[in-house]
Amino acid sequence: MKYKSQKVAYWFFALSMLLLVLQLFYGFIMGFAHMGFDGWHNIFPFNTARAVHTNLLVVWLLSGFMGAAYYIIPEEAETELVSVKLAYLQLISLAVVGVIAVVGYHFNYWEGRKFLEIPRPLDWLVVVNVLLFLGLILVTLFKGKKRTTTSLVLTMGLFFAALLYLPGMIWFDSQTMDSFFRWWVVHLWVEGVWELILGGILAFLLIKITGVDREVIEKWLYVIVGLTFISGILGTGHHYYYIGTPKYWLIIGGIFSALEPLAFLGMALFAIAMYRKGEKKHPNAIALKWTLGTAIVSFLGAGVLGLAHTLPQVNMYTHGTLVTAMHGHLAFWGAYGMIVLAIISYTMPNLTGRNLYKKSSGIWAFWLSNLGMIGMTSSFAAAGVAQVYLERIMGLDFGEVQKEIQVHFFVLILCASLFTVGVCIFIYDFIRYGRPTDEALIASGD
Ligand code: HEM
Ligand code: HEM
Ligand SMILES: [Fe+2]
Image (cartoon, rainbow, N blue to C red):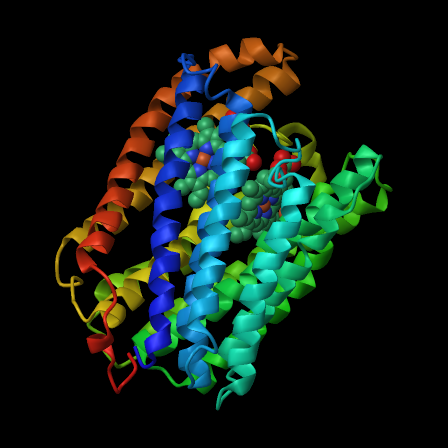
């Protein structure tokens, strides 16, 4: 690390890891409930567990992105963060809003809008928190000596992510209108502006790890940003098929969303090409694994498994089934979970001055978590396809079908356990690194 203030990143990563563990706990509750073991129902009803599981996911990812920004922006702009104290205040307020929301869900203080369950009064706290974060990042960037493409793409992603939170706060009496704008948040986040955040972090990591010229890597970044916007904005239409919106969305959504995998394919090819081109053998092989892994698994989870149900003819049958959960898991993990673990793996030795990347534990963490997640995705796929067939084609009752597919959740739990072991090893390494120190300041900046 080059600047003392980059140490703030560590605490955002620590919060992120804590929330990840909690997220998995709620995942297991739901997995067991699907198997027919719902003994905890009175404390953790399925709907509460689901809201907590997905909201914790979003908050651990956001905390990871914020940590990444607090590390990357000072380094790219070549200046200290404008205020470390305010960054800690922002961290604490993020944690407080998260805790209030999650506790509230257990007492039915929530809105039944998937992913946007946070009640609107609490949304204002989120807005204040994010404004503080953006203020710190923007002032640092503009006070700094340099404004690189990498830092601008990352900041643009964070800025637009904040802006796109607002359509989800408008109140509508119509279910269709509410759904329409809910997708501006959910879809335009994961298939739009979050891809800029992903691209920015990926470019930063590739510059550092492969040693390929910044100019080459940043040129690719423009291509990816272009592909993302061309396909992703109108691709929102794949959520407007049968919800009461005009019929033209069937064709617009179908065509543009089918083009979305190109952006992810571009990212995968880009990362592999830079790895091949790079001559510099960076010693942190674990960070390299997570970085290349992100590019490849995001293509599989978002690109391939997204394409699988994006055409209206298919989505008519699969909408809202476990096929969606199949895609949701691998896409979120591959694109956003893995990039957070990649930036943590890269920054920890620099923040703490200790090197654990020579140990085999990091490799185990990588393979166990990824194999576990691929197994989980396959279990959801098997359950999802069976569900579509029995429920939507044979016309069986929802509850009856859920009983028929219980067996797939036994496999899901086994694979989720493998995944959890991998994640626990990762977190064990994170703890073993210890706290960041000023002694870790190094001149070379990598
Ligand atoms: C990293 C990027 C992506 C992530 C994290 C992601 C995640 C998700 C999640 C969580 C849902 C469920 C949302 C909800 O019901 O509220 C969803 C739905 C969907 N996604 Fe993605 N996705 C990504 C990219 C893509 C891409 C590139 C495509 C198309 C090629 C796609 C196609 C779909 C479709 C069609 C649905 C609707 C499923 C339904 O009707 O139930 N996704 N995605
Ligand atoms: C111990 C590991 C995990 C288990 C057992 C688990 C299990 C589950 C279950 C049973 C559901 C509900 C499916 C339904 O609606 O019936 C769910 C939803 C979801 N989980 Fe997980 N999960 C785990 C880890 C993760 C991770 C690591 C991620 C992301 C990186 C994730 C992302 C999601 C998402 C996005 C949904 C909503 C899917 C949708 O909209 O259909 N989960 N999970
Ligand atoms: Fe979408």
